[in-house]
Length: 330
Image (spheres, rainbow, N blue to C red):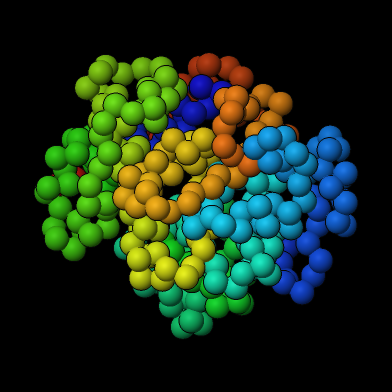
């Protein structure tokens, strides 16, 4: 698992189905439609299947999960990027939350602050999907994994928050450190959190433990880049709720940002301790949470191992690192 985390971080820092209808009955799990929670105890069979549990281990349906999250101001839904079950759960949970409370807002790691106007234009029907994908720099897996979320939002007049910081800026932070932000033109500085969390907290220790290489100074810069994502997403959501206090936010992001409240959640609460933040986190037979973690869990099959041979993995990381040669920083 560490090697997978490290590979993902390296790619970030070194180079740095139709939508659900609210009129349909929501499934208990992706295995079996219905309302019985008994189905949630079944073993997952395919990569689309999942089972939900409360922090105490009680089985839940999607509808029951939505009800359990009713009092949250912000719901952080972690994902393993490109995992079919994770993305299916996100769409079904968004629909269930909307059925329960139409004052729901979708926040996404996958779009950056500087692209908010493009997102808004798409939701308003002013541009087409291919324009959205191109001009908003949508992730390569947008069509299969994030289209259902955005289309549900569009059909039901749900705001979509482009929560993240631009990748090019974060990559330069990873190269130069937090001081890089002082070099940004005023309009670009608005695309990143006003302040970064650089204290030696538990999130930083978890990040360092996941790394396998680099000297202390390099690791510090890499963590600064990592928390730039989290602080920016946190600040974006906190600022939104100041303007729209009646809304509930569901935020989708990578598992490392959301699990156990260490990353984005801690940055949210540092900015507004009154906000109630709850986490929904994927687990598998190979990856679990620490005992007593406050997260609701979604158990699914692990994704296939990306690399078996170490040399293949290192070659891939080297290739990703070469993208950094084209990086232009101030």
